[in-house]
Length: 294
Ligand code: MN
Image (cartoon, rainbow, N blue to C red; front, top):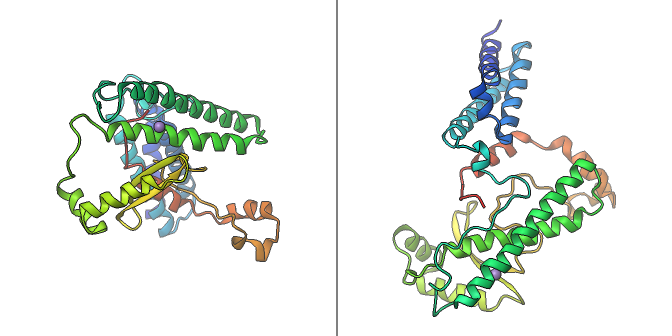
């Protein structure tokens, strides 16, 4: 047995021990961890009985490392509900409580507005998102995607509504006002010139939103700078507060020269070139951004 397949055999013993113990099974009951554990298990079994090359072993090592990080994280979150305490099951979003009294933003925002806005409007987004998620789950289980476009729109509209309002309640407070301090102030000055010009730009963006929508200060993890954006409605077909992992360009320029108007063939073929290790890497990094689940 080569050095490499020896390592694969060790990994596969480690995984087997996790699957065989009750404590291990409790930790991997998180579907995300479970999938990764299964993935590592399959790869390890395949490599221990073949003559793996160095790259394959490095890939196994990378995935095993990722799994070990996820296991540790899952263990620290293992409360009475296990993984349910740290993720929102399909169709089970909840209206987060307002972090202060309904009247405490007066006179800037009246108690009446806060009651309606939080209890009625935000609640409707939570209900709409739950419904959309359940209907999309139903589409997957029945393999009937005929109404998918509708439910995707609902998921984007209500999902962004829910996530943005959840942020909105938190970034206001009766003790609010003034200016940011420290590193955030320095970043604002770096990216917008000064706090005053940031404030002017943000206010104008808000005033100029066409119809209904939002103004947002966002952090671009790609360019590593702050940006101000507008969103019409809650943002067409996007759920703000999510991070893209796997994306497929279906603009004509991506396939027309080769596939003409046959987008379906392009989409089906495209799966043959999807590089999952990169998607896994993006997911592992994205998962490090964690807010309280609602
Ligand atoms: Mn609103």
